[in-house]
Image (cartoon, rainbow, N blue to C red; front, side, top):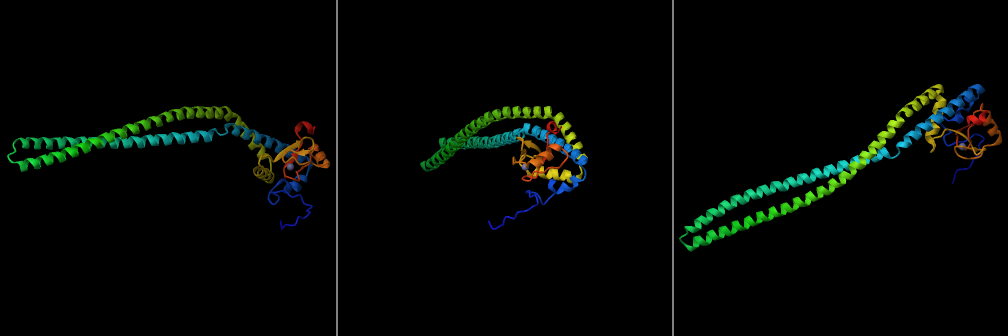
Length: 274
Ligand SMILES: [Zn+2]
C-alpha cells in the first residue's frame, strides 16, 4: 500500500465527494426547527421506502420463476412442432415409397405377362433379370417404409414424453402465476398508498437533501440512508459506536447527526425522542 494514511479532520465517507448528508450539514444547521422537521420527514420517508421494498420482496423470485417456466413451456412447444414436422416428412416419404411400389408392381406385372409369351431363352433371361432388379427396388422401398415407420414411432414416443413434461410445467406455471397475481393484487392497494406517501414526503424536501438521501440509499447494501441508534450506542446502519456527545445530539432530535463511519443520518426513534 503506497498511500499514506493522512489524519484528516474532515469526516470522510465513501461517498464524500458527491451530494451526501455530510455536504449538506451547513444547510441543515441554519435553523434547529427546520432541521427537526427535515429529520422527521427523512425518517418517515425511509420508513415508507422500507415498506415499499418489503412489498416488492414479497413477490420475491416469483416473477423470475414465472418467466423461466414460460420459457420452458415455449421450448417444449417448439420441440413438439419440430418433431411433428419430422413425422410429417416421414409420412410423405411413405406415401412416395408406396406410389413407387405401385408403379413397380405395374411394371413387374407387365414383364410377367411378357414372360408367358416368350419364345427364346435369351429373352427369357433378360426379362427375368429385369424382374429381379424390379424386385430389389421394391424391397428397398419396403425397407425404407419400415424404417420411416420406426422413426415415426420413435418421434411420437418423444412427443409423448415432451407432452408429459409440458403437462407438469403447465401446472407449475399456472400455480406460480396465480400466486404472483394474488400477491400483486393483495399488495397493489397498499403499494399505491405507500408510493403516494413516499412521493408526498419527498416533495417536502429540498432537492439537495432528497438527492443526498437517494444517493446514500442507492450506495448502501441495506438501502438505509436514515437509521436509528442500535443497541443504545451504535449506528443502526454500520453498527459502529457513536460518541456520547453525538448520542445526545441524536436524542435532541434537533441536530443533523451523520455517522462518521458510514455517512448515514442517525435519528432518534420517535418514541425515544420525546
Ligand atoms: Zn454508520
